[in-house]
Length: 183
Image (cartoon, rainbow, N blue to C red; front, side, top):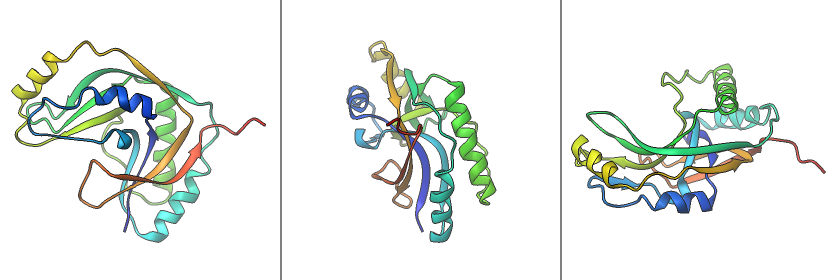
């Protein structure tokens, strides 16, 4: 039973720039740069038949131009119990529309709705108990000013992940171009 999610791949050069933030945070389990992505919709564990339906249905997402995504800051999910360090993606109406289309498609297939608000980001590290709010605040305080990083997303991927591990490695099961090739 694969654990699936949809997302936008982060190009290697952007991953390299983000990898400069690795280290110096006790209790952090760093995501490998090759596994950086922007999650559009976490699906979860699904049976093989539903996985095939999802793969086929995502191919029907409407064509749209490539998206330019901008990363503008480091932030943390979890407040007093921090659990993830991430690079924030500047909110973008086209990205939100793409995510909403994925949500609609998955609901039509019977996948339970995602109850979390869509917050586009690239997870850099998962945080264990050792990374308390004071340690995270100190880590963020000593980081250089985050220089905006932009990249163009030309396709969306359906990823699978190993069960119960989180943080990768992730496998691209299918990829969907955002726009038709102009030949």
